[in-house]
Image (tube, rainbow over all chains, first blue to last red):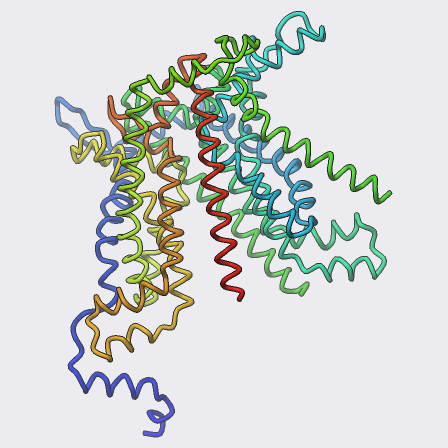
Length: 307
Length: 263
């Protein structure tokens, strides 16, 4: 009895329920159209990808059944063409991400130490190129890097080389394109954690006799790790799955996992194998997120200790 | 020493800026190049702009892009806002399930979302074209609307809606008159986000569009693949100026809002 009096909210609610018979409408019902939409356009397509990757089906005969064929084609150890493609994609994405981190971290740090007024304008200037169409930005690099492009014309004009240097259609040009396109995705999350960093901790570290290098290694960098890990995810994932950068800057020579999936669906019409590759890519995404997520959690635990 | 460090910082920032803006500067410059060459300057000319505006495919693609972006953003904002309100009122377990499903298109690689929708459209027999594009764009837009509206709902007083019901509002009018005004900034942000994502999207459009129906992005892709196309430089220059103006307007507006909020 006394318990009820201690809870005026519940009392009010029950009084309200008694007063007017509560209408049967629940607020959560307004999410119903979305739930139906998400079921049809998010859940069902994912299930279909799984179904296509594990079942064969012949158009004319109409037969249908379970098969490992598509995954076996990928995990073919006597002719590991597709595993090589995946390995190349992972490797290119890792190198691109690492370069973005090495170039981007100092920039994010410099940016975070600017005066707030200037900082706003400068970070605006960083975001601006990202709003340009991705394809047009990549096309611009074709203009610059081609054999008859600006860079080669300039190099020949000043006599540094007499034959054009082949910049395009190499692993290097794909990595370059990735770095260009995804660098802001690395800088911005790191910058966001660095501006929230408590300046008094950096001061305290200095007061206790640490050099800048020590402060950076022991205080600033560990505290910015959440930003670093989301920066890594935000550059690694698009670099891993792209087929535009590789198609435009790598030509037909550099084929990545994204190119291979695209070909299965839009050229050869092999939905089964394309779906299997998509499943493999999804598993890889989940793994990457699990690794980074675990790292972030560990980080926040030690971060809590530090505080 | 301090001045040296400052100088280094300046030089480093300048280098990064050069890297980020070099291609944009090159494209804008070459959009006025009379020569078709990508390496040499053949004098000032506006002919690529004239060619661009005379390109029926580009103009049609622009029309498609705007139609799809506006329609998809509008529908996604309505469905997404309702979804956020409903999800916020759900019990924990169903809420968790629905939110996880909502994160799927955000977390999945675009190419995976694209092919999964392609499979759906082909399996169900929805013809690839404007309708499939619209449905696909709504699919990746709605989660961003939900994610923009959700924080505003969490900030809001939970009992405002119930109070409105007690005072005699119907659920619909309580949502429209009490909840909606509170979460409006999130709704507007979500709508703008959805619109820009739609305009910018290439990968998902590429997989879900059919022959003859191009968006600006897919049309750019097919033209750029065919080789030198100076009218693309003109298009970049125009898009850059439009984006610049839009972002400046948005920034001025939001800083005004911030100042009003801090007063």
